[in-house]
Amino acid sequence: MVLDVTWAVRWLTLCAQAMAEHRVWLIELDRAIGDSDHGENMDRGFQAVLEKLAEAQPETPGAALKLTAMTLMSKVGGAAGPLYGTAFLRASTALGDAAEIDPARLADALVAARDGIVARGKAESGDKTMVDAWTPAAEAAQAAAADGAGTVLGVLVAAAEAAEAGAVATDPLVARKGRASYLGERSAGHRDPGAASSALILRAAVGAAA
Amino acid sequence: MTVRLVVVSHSEKIADGAVELAAEMAPDVVILAAGGTADGRIGTSLEKVMSALDKAAGGDGVVVLTDLGSAVMTAESALELTADPVGVLLADAPLVEGLVAAAVAAQGGADVKEVKRAAEAVYGLGPEVAAASHSLAASTVTEGSVTGAGPDFTGDFELVNEAGMHARPAAKVAGGLASLNAEVTVNGVDGASMTALMTLAAGKGSVLHIEAWGPDAERALNYVGGLVQAGFGEP
Image (cartoon, rainbow over all chains, first blue to last red):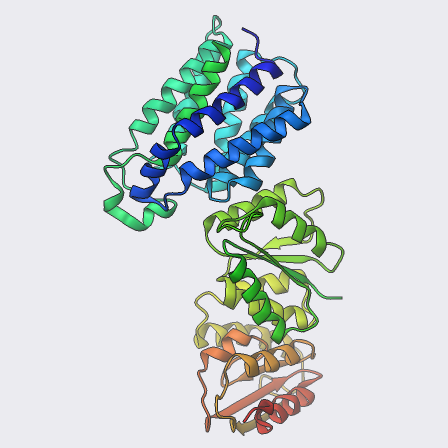
């Protein structure tokens, strides 16, 4: 499997499908501890990404991710817009104008995405935010890429599985960032919607490469 | 030419309303609203923020004021994507109070860093803080001066308007003093700080004790005294 612009467009298309399919679930997660707009916002944002991709026909994975970044920042509306926008933007910068992505560069892009989210949202691990999905994902991707036999698919699978485990692990946490932090102890017992959508996005990356 | 301001809020109405309020106190300052999403929902939009920053460019710098968390993030993202973010500063301040303080400072000719500071000074600014920051400034001004540490001019004026030292009078006093070369205290707080003046909570009948230092001290005293005695043009 080669990670080129075709993969990138398929990934983003699968992201849009996943957000449409899980829209109600994300809304319910967000209703419990936030303002119940996450599913709506992500669905709208990725539908807009699909339209932009069809119009602009990007030629590299980096260009596709940059277009995604700009679109999410403009269309999502909630905090997820600048957070995911920054993640895709930093990943796009890490990929540069490469036509194909190798395992090391893929891991670099995932680390850059995580660093972008941390820089923008100022959250740390354990704050019950999307960082709790992205940090294990970035670390697992680095470990998989450092293994000489690592493939791009292996890196993507490692990242997606770590993100899913990280999202599940937000259930018992008390939120310390974002709208959910206003609830204090009452935020425990619910999955963080941003961590949940992050896991969906990284799972879609695997689906696009499989 | 003055520093320009951009207001980023989740709500278009809040952004527009804050601009309307600040414009009344700072009629010559360009203040642009970037509230809500492009399709009129609650939220923030990178497109709107970037368009406002684009329109605000070309002056003496831009100070951006924001409301809730993601407005800050959208504003930061816009700066990350701006080709030339030099001279664009984000103020960490309450939206309405910070904007009004920033607008008054900009109206008085303050530079971009001073305007940002004026907005941020709104946080937790009690009379003691203002007085302490003033005494530092005053000692700088009077260093080596033959007049010593005492004020060059002083005066006491009674507030005659019904509402006393509320927002609009405070804006007039602070805005006018910002353009004079003088250090002025009003009952011990910085006369060039609108928010410090409002912390005085001085009502009708209160006496304001003015102390002024520097080359324009006499003009400053006359300016403040004139405004107070005229009831700021209010009933």
